[in-house]
Image 1 (cartoon, helix red, strand yellow):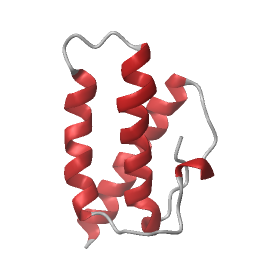
Image 2 (image 1 turned 60 degrees about the vertical axis):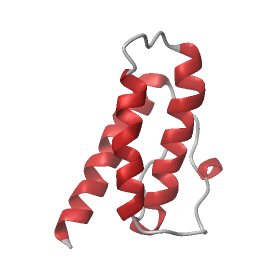
Image 3 (image 1 turned 90 degrees about the vertical axis):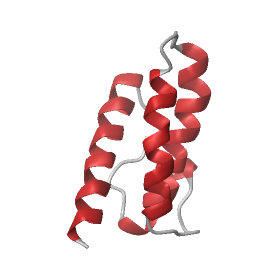
Image 4 (image 1 turned 180 degrees about the horizontal axis):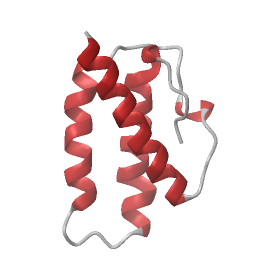
Length: 87
């Protein structure tokens, strides 16, 4: 789960979250109402505006429980929104 993400890693962190949501989370959760897909769509938009860096990788962050993953995902999204709205 991405944690303490620097601005140059925003894009990678969002892509890692998106990959996890579309992979493990979708496979292990009953999502008849497509809440996961609805959550991923805004990430796609955010990725377009986030800074790019090739120095970051998903493997950099440790695996966590699902509840911690959700909490850190929310923290990351708030952090990115805050950084983008300062500009």
